[in-house]
Length: 76
Image 1 (cartoon, rainbow, N blue to C red):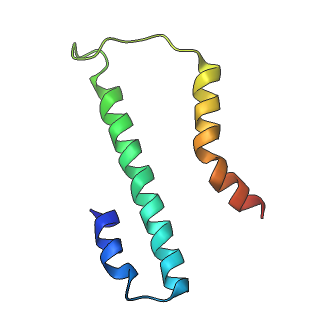
Image 2 (image 1 turned 45 degrees about the vertical axis):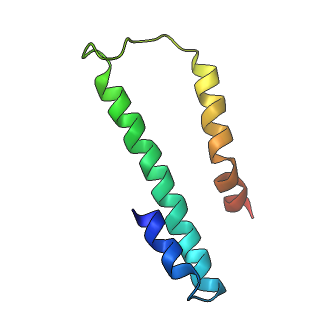
């Protein structure tokens, strides 16, 4: 919802405000992923989704890959 509404404002604002909107969009997308992951996690053990064994190294690699843009931005 936030993501869709920020696109409506994008054409009317300057460059600095667009960067702020980009941050809001990124945050909204990350929040959506977090909520979906939490919902999936809450269903484990409820009988709707079978628990699965995963390798922690792969989960860490995936997390680092997803966070790479933020890591690079923080370093600069």
